Image 1 (cartoon, rainbow, N blue to C red):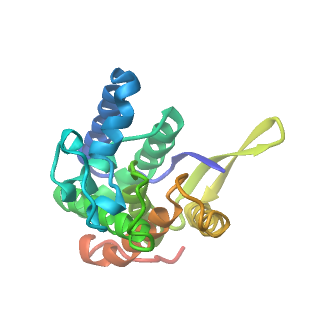
Image 2 (cartoon, helix red, strand yellow):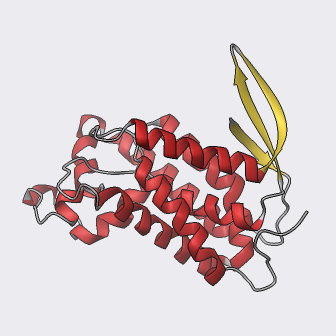
Length: 228
């Protein structure tokens, strides 16, 4: 199920959402410009649990920023075109309404805090991992969790692959995001113990963080789980 857009209008221009998308795209083109050296950049700016939480250190020539700062720099790097496009698509569809629900400044803080929770959810179960974590999906998962609680009845146009064909349907956001979260849970259980790959624990942690934090960030006029 691939969301394409929602029918949920906003009152303000989502400057922060647009800014994050631009920053991620520019960062990705910078990665492409590095050629074979991109792996070194991932180790320098990605979040490696063993470095941030396990007490290990990078080689001096790879240490570009303080270890703790890689929690944030990692949120703007991506491992490929599909990684980038998928994350930016979800952020574009759902981020504008969440930003509209709390204002630009609070949304930026909310986004980053959700990303931090996602990092902890991925790293703490295995703090000695030497696999660097990159991508905006943990922070974006927090946006999805917040959207689920505020706009579960918004209609989302989703593409559903059936064999060689794509069918489009308008589906309540609650079903789209609920299915997405269930998929993360199943995928996390299936990939348990396997090194590398998709950071499903970060997705789950970010999503739950967004649900837990949204009451403290949204405007009072925005209800949670509104009736139809």
